[in-house]
Structures are given as structure tokens and as C-alpha cells.
Amino acid sequence: MIAPAARNLARAAVRRAGATASAQQLPAAGARSLSIFAGAARPSTGSISAQAQAFSAPQARGIKHIDFAGDGQVETVYERADWPIEKLHDYFKNDTLALLGYGSQGHGQGLNLRDQGLNVIVGVRKGGASWKEAQEDGWVEGKNLFDIDEAAQKGTYLMMLMSDAGASDAYPKLVKYMTKGKTVYWSHGFSPVFKDQTGIEAPKECDVILCAPKGSGRTVRTLFKEGRGINSSVAVYQDITGKALEKAVAMSVAVGSGYTYETTFEKEVYSDLYGERGCLMGGIQGMFKAQYDVLRANGHSPSEAFNETCEEALMSLYPLVGEHGMDYMYKACSTTARRGALDLAPVFEKALKPVFEDLYARVKDGSETRRTISFASQKNYRELFDKETDAIAAQEMWRVGHKVRALRPDRAGKDL
Image 1: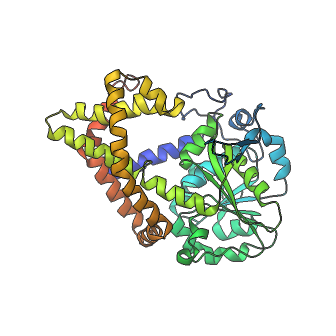
Image 2: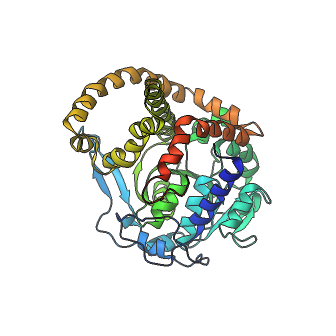
Image 3: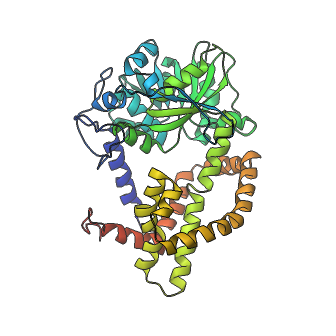
């Protein structure tokens, strides 16, 4: 089990590493970095870091219209080649990008904006945990770090990057700063879409846009540093100026997206909540745990159960799926493995589809939103979350995993 003190030290190390810029030119897009912890001095405000230069390097690709499924539904995809860094600087030359909140997305998007040389400031509660985290990442009080009200007043783009529950609490105090000519930016459709529960109504004289990176803020930062960029979706909730979509696409590149596709606020939040509870997080933990427990109950050793459940999946098979697709991974495996997988996949699909259908219905009708808001409204919700995730860390499967990972050749048993 990971003690809270150790967990907090690990988080601080990741924050410091994410804030540190690499002094050397990064590998070309598509190349893999061995570590996210390459270090050098932070760029000064207005300068362009090596990461940003690599990220915005000229590319041959640009805006595309793609029929992904071959069913006639054509989607528009925007790529960062459409927004070189000089164009970004010109587009935002009169703007102040105010990050309101400094959680996972605030960290990643904020550091990327800063590295791109844009005028970005952070607004959080002075003296709080997020304030201290921002200072650790090099944000300076009075220069680009302010109390949330002052940042909201200064900003022309108000980037609502606090937690969903936090946004509901803060919005009534911040709405007075959402005046004509400003743009309200979200990275999750949760608050505006479920306005009957959150109480968040769009300001009448502002464009309201969304850029939702398809990954955590830490991944947003890591992929930017590697010169690749994360994929994101963009959407418009309210278009007062007639330029809201253009703003959303420009912001998507500014925060570190490699390419973006259009969606709606509603579809973004439905797919996001659904995916997190399903294959991305909840479902994968449940499936890993069930398989591991059955192996252990049938006399398999802890290391064998973990290797056959998690380690092989994460280190060998899933990377093949990510790079080339499920069919490629199947073809890369033995005849025996392939035959069994092809036979059992429909069985799992049939068993799981009702669970997923019920889950989507709960997301769409707001049940999952009510659960989230109710839980996160508790003053000690962070401690309660830690208690539950610490319980996962204490499960035999993940205690075994800690030792198995330590045996990987690149770790040389250091954590045994």
C-alpha cells in the first residue's frame, strides 16, 4: 500500500517534472521520448521554448474532411499545421488567457501555453494547495499568478479549468467578469450541459467554447514536450461574434493539441463520462480484478496471475493495439491465442453490452452527474477519494504489480 505521504511526494515530483522545460530540441513528431523528466530552465514570459518550437514545426498536413467509418458521415479535422506559432501569436496578441483553476488540465494546458510564448496567467485561491502547486511550476505572484477574482478580471479568455464541483461553487462569483467581448472556455461540457444541476448559465454576451483533450492534463503536457500533441475535440455552445469555432480551434493548438475534431458540448460530456466509467477506467479495473481473482482461486501464483492479467496486456499487447489496431495484435499472437480471443470476444460483448447501455442511460439522464456533484460537494472529498484509491493500491493484484514492475530491465529491481 502506498502511504499518503509517499503519494504526495510522487505528485510533487510529477508537477516539478512537468513544469521543467527541456533545453534541447525534441525528437520529431512520432518519435518516442524515454522520459518526461528532461530538465532545463523555464522560459520567460513571451519566449518560445524548445518544446514549442518542436511542437509547431512545419508539417505537410492540414484541415481535412474525413469519412472515418465509410458510412457517409464526413467529419472535419483540424491540425496544428493550420496554426503555426507565428499565427497563434498574432491571433492572441491582444488577449490574456486566464486559467481559473490549476488542477490536472490547468497544469498541462497552462505550461504549454506558457511555453508557446502566449500571455497566460493563473487564477486560484491565494495560499491554497493549487496556489502552492502553481508556484512550484514557476508561476510568479503578481506577474502571472493571481487570486482567482483578479485573474478573471484581467482575462479576455476565461478558462474554466477547475473541478466540476468547484466550477459550480465559483461560477456565481465569476460570472460578473464574463462581460461583452470576452470568451468563456471549458475543457469539459459537464457544467453547461447539466446546468439544471450545476446552476451554470452561459453569459449572454460571451462566446462559449470548448477544447477537450482526450487524456489527462499530465498527458497533455507530456505529448507536447515530445513534439507530438494530444488529440482533442472542440465545440461551440454559444457564438456571439461569429468566430467562436475559430477561437476553439486556435485554443486547441495553443494548449497542445496535435489535431482536433468537432463535436458538441452534449456529445463531449456524454462520451467522456461514459468512457471513463467504462473501458478507460472503471471497466478495465473491474475486468483485471475479476480475471486475477479467478486465477488466484485456481492455485496460480501471484506473479503469474499478474503477468497473465495486467503486465502482458499493458507492456506487450495494448501497445500493439494502440499503434496498429486490434487485428494487428491478434495476428501478432499465436494461433491458439487468436482462436480463443476470436471465440470469446462476442461472449464478452454480449455480456457487457447491457452494462454499457445502462451506463450510457445513467450518464444521459444526469444520474452520474448527481452522484459526482453530491460526492464532490463534501469538504473532505479529496481525502475520501484518496481512501478509495489507496484501497485499490492495497489490493493484492496491485501490490504484486508494484514488485513485478520493479523487475522490468529498465528499473533494475530498484523498488523491490
